[in-house]
Amino acid sequence: MADWHAPQGPFDIPDVPDYVPRRLKPYLFILFVLIVQFSGGVYLAAATDMVGTTALMQEDVLMAGYASIIGLVINFAVMFRIKFRFSVRNQLLVSSMVLIAANIICACTTSVPVLVITCFVAGWFRMQATFACNSTIQLWLTPVRDMAIFFCYVYIIVDSVIQLSGIATIYTAFFSQWEYMHWIMTGLLALMMIMVMVLIKPVRGPMFIPLLGIDWIGALLWAAFMMCFTFIYVYGNYFDWWDSGEIRGAALLGIACLCINLWRASFLHHPYISFQAMKNRNVIRATAIYLVFFTLIATEHVFEHSYAANILWFDETNLIDLNWYVFAGIIAGCAFTYFTFAIRKWRYKTMTAIAFGLAVIYLAYFYFVIDYGVEKEMLFVPLFIRGAGAVIISIVFLTSIVQSGLPFQVFPQALTINGFTGAVMGATFGPAVIGEILRRTMAKNADLLSANIVDFNPDLTHIPIARIYGMVQTQALVVSMKEIYGWLLIVALTSLLVILVSYSSVRPFAIFPKWSNVRRVIKHIVRTDKDIRNNEICTQP
Image 1: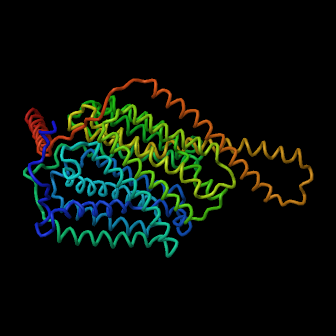
Image 2: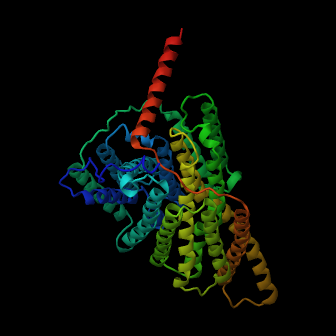
Image 3: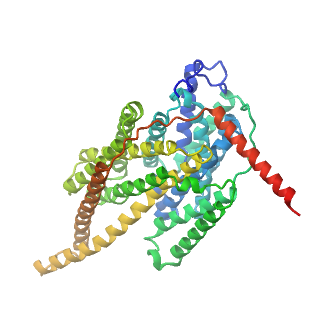
């Protein structure tokens, strides 16, 4: 297999003219990837500033941010088709223009539907531009097309940019206004367009494959289902969950879209997501692991900001500086996964146990250390560990999707499922559940603390009632967080025990096929769809 994938000569990119040094060509595309990844529509780090200067709510900004991720995820199933239909130059130019328009709209609009739709479209084109660049330099990263190595590179770029964009956004807003981040990215995207026009040639592949046979209706229905799922868990607490017509309506619409998709997948020749992808054992296992793991570390979204802002009294710049700790963990996690999982081929079970072990340490640290007098530097350990554990579990189970034995035409559909369960469900389901548990636990503990204060301090007339209320709420928050950390720690230890007693000897050997073979498979799919369509037309009365 290694000989079959062996390169025939020094790596080169024919899309870039020869006057650009060969060694610099891959780094040009890495620069493009960084610029594109920084341009994601809204910047969630600026949510507080956006809420303060516009009529938007915190939930509106979160919904727009997740809409960008959904657009990115939906693109997975067709990104190979688009790659073989348009040149890299055209993909990058069109994506840059769309992202420039998205940045301008997101900086100016206060309409939630416009913001959500804009971010969805921006996510689609951000993924396509990223894939165009990464697929171009794949052989430079791993000449044998080992996807474990390739995914280490992908996650060190994507997850690092998430942390760095938050830091850049907050400091931009601190020194000027949050809108300036959009103008900066607009300028960088314009510079990227100029570089693409000057340095990238319009090279067309050896085969022209039209965009025929794609289930666009299925794509819209799956996107609607994902949007409804996200709406429920983002706005659930605001609308009081099932007591509101909005949440019930979103649930009914989401179920309807899901049922229609399943029904269409039962008879379509090439549905957008097929049953073969949904029923794959590795896809199901990855979904279950994602739900458990990202629910365990969902305190990242629910607790950490409240703890640092309301108890430790960190301002926005000190809060965002914590991203550096997570960034260091991401770098370390990718490096560790590269040397152990990708190079030394450690087992999936070993890597999963390590990731859950890191989650145990993260939860245990906060359970035993959380207090009123924690120094900023003491948060380095748990945040570093959380960043490393999350990136390890993501790389490992994305590689398992490649190794699942699915035919290539079904493999991108499995990536769409993996992206939705890991990036969307993992980021919304867990925080919503933990947030609701925190709300109920805080109410219970606040009642108990209030009763104790009244019982042991009958004369509190000299203390303002607002100050007493604040003290009770702060104490209830700390007690509730410690209680929930304890329960999550028990679940994490149980999950780790289950992983350790299970048996699995599977090691990563996921090798990506040659691009010529991928192109041949896609062309065969298009030709088959044409023949089926022609037969249906001929048999019609």
